[in-house]
Image (tube, rainbow, N blue to C red; front, side, top):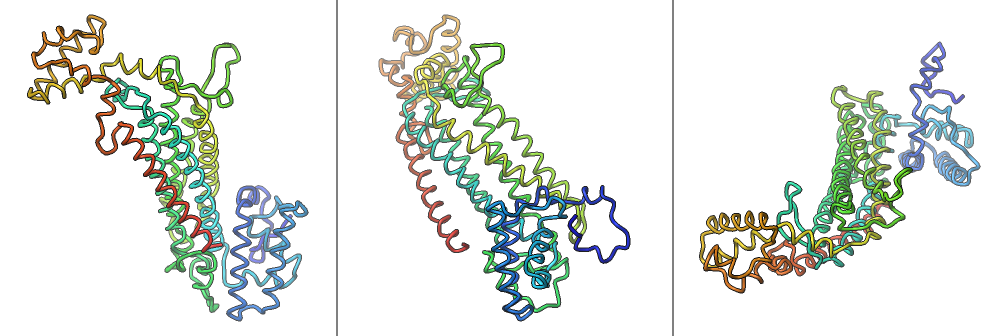
Length: 473
């Protein structure tokens, strides 16, 4: 079994059950690339400051490169008996390069080391999630562009309310996801704001470290300004999990819409067979399991966020072992969102829309009643009177099993002499949509503008992302 780094203080072996309980190697090993990157920069700084020799630094650098290569090739496997990823790297390095490996940890603690590794790992994951979100937004924009003329009911309280288009409905989700993209960028800026390396266990160190050097080389804006805060801060992790949770909430809302839209009661869309499942007993079933799982997994991600909040709410400065629980929650939240995004994107891209069914549903819901009232208002009737009169007309139509469009002009005039032939244009569902040209509305020109604006934002994001990756890597 790998030896604990802190063994020298103790005269009695730790109970094996405590070792198992204390160990984090089974999950924190996924940060091994970040751990070695941080160690490489730390060693280079130690040599620059004359704290270790250039020969030791060279040995460390070559040793780390060798470990990375052997892990990638499979020649080296992570020891499950190691206490954590930091211990595994240091002990493997020492076994390969001797005393130089023992000097690597000079001027640092596992406390600032893990705080660094987590920030570096989160940075890479944030960028991957942003790419996943951008891919979904592009798929939504494409599908929306194909459906700017697909009239459907818009809903409030899940009751048919006013006419919109399917493209307009989809773009609502594009804007939600664009905010998610912005939130992740914003959270990343705080991940990168302060480098904890050099905080030591909690009180810094007596060695003449160059913290500005390590911060810059690792892609941070500056070193953290307080060593206690440097090792105990997990705000950035909570914020990241919060942004992930909000994105999952948006995916869950979209999933609920898709579940409704593909049901026989709506039948506005049909999902591709590749993204549905069947029943073990009912041969006619085509179940939207992907979207149902997204709804379920959203609660799970909320649990990850709550784990972090509850973990941090009562612990004093500085580092406490409770904070080891941050990683599994974060790893799960990231993995879950990535899985959901990369599954829902092709599902949405391949779904088939059924505009004729949308149009039929729109015709039966009196969703042009507001337009009828607006017609009377424009003719001079006060809106509240027009609203009341139109409500009476809708009630009579329901009793007679008719729609407003099916009323004759003579019938219209029994309600008000203000009605003329042009009322049919005013309540035509397509024209109702096209008349709503206000900024952000459902008219085709408005939806096309939304698509163009969203795509422009994505282009700007891609340019910024590429520039930042070049500056860091």
